[in-house]
Image (cartoon, rainbow, N blue to C red; front, side, top):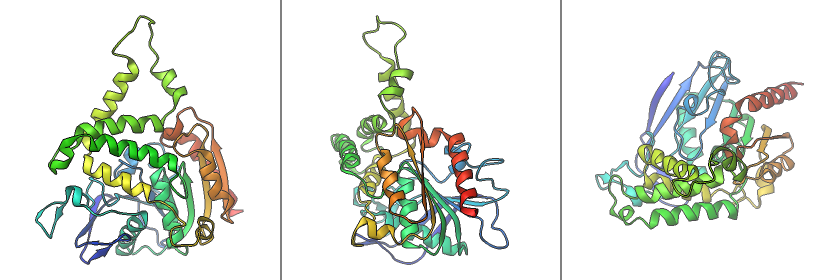
Length: 341
């Protein structure tokens, strides 16, 4: 249980070309692998999260939660390109002896899955009871289910998509433009691009929530206010908060990673790719999600044989998948019961 790292000692080839001569994967585990080795829950994290899923998804993992360590062996691995222990832009490039920074290679979710599957083999896991993820974690979980269909028994796909839509890519590009406007990003140094990332985070927040929740939570108490608005302070605070825990080079890398997501690439079509899935699928949409509208999750449910679609009515937009844990728990419990029937 707790935090671990796995070091792969071979050359790790990448889908878009190139390779990593060294690969390290940071991960957390909770619970124990049972004797039948059929109680594994693989949690895939969102854009700037880390492998400590119990921390960022309270109410979902822990004692008496839907994923209870007393019942399941739960794993969450940090994705390549991030900055929480897995090889990324701030890691030292063995070829140069210096951090990669902007020279870190482009990644796809198939690279992410392959890197985590090396960890899976290292741990001796031969079956995954459930792979679950929200947002880009859902994109990773979906790819895992397509690439290794015999391995995955249940796929829980929350507020995500089978291919990143132009709408989502537009948000990504707006964030990249913000980072690129910060000249310190090109200096390849610690803290480079931080001002740009701060602005990028402000852009991202608009896609994670929506007008309804902002108008409710950031409204002014007095009509006399003409500056220092609550909404402005909130954007500033969230930008500063990310700068303290992340870096612009990883952020930029992960934006590019997310944009590559398309299960139909080199597989004929999205529909043909989805036919490869053998898992029982639960697709969950958030009614007010602007970034991944509910038709994205419905598309998956419509093109996989053993799929169920459920929608959560929430004011919180895309962030609802992190907040509405009681509703998620009820939906997942019902899903497991239906599958057993």
